[in-house]
Length: 156
Ligand SMILES: [Cu+2]
Image (cartoon, rainbow, N blue to C red; front, side, top):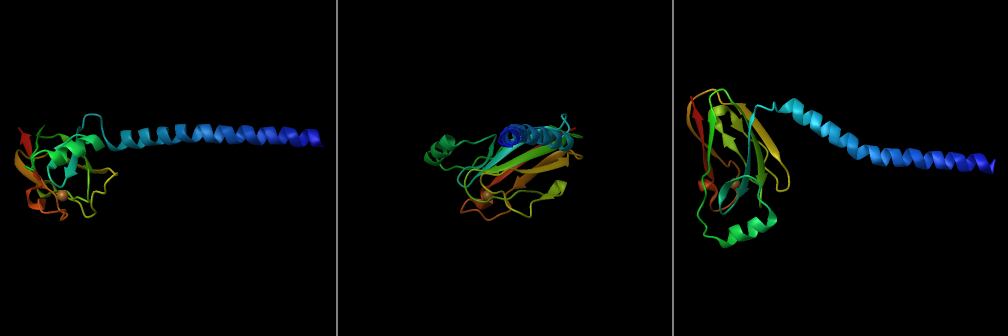
């Protein structure tokens, strides 16, 4: 009987190892599938990181960047993003400090919930009209909140 028990124990451990090893692989596969389903590869993707002193920063911002950003002059940046008419545009929105918001009313984008630090909020829309449009932060985030803006240019 003791012999069978040991065999069952080994089996149990093997199953446990399989689950532990398989879980991350499964999660990764699931993420990739969701990602692929949601965003066609032809979409124009941009990452915007909100910063209370510097406004919208194009791209990822890392911890060491934030420290140097605080030490630089406090002028707000206003990024300009260019796309073409008909593009599917995806913004990955992040925050480097406090809760920010995002609004691009010309394309019906208006976040009701804020962009939490450490999380990614994604918005997408079809750039179906030509022109120059302004996006902004729609969550009161500090003294420079009103200046936290950027420009989207949709070319013909
Ligand atoms: Cu903000």
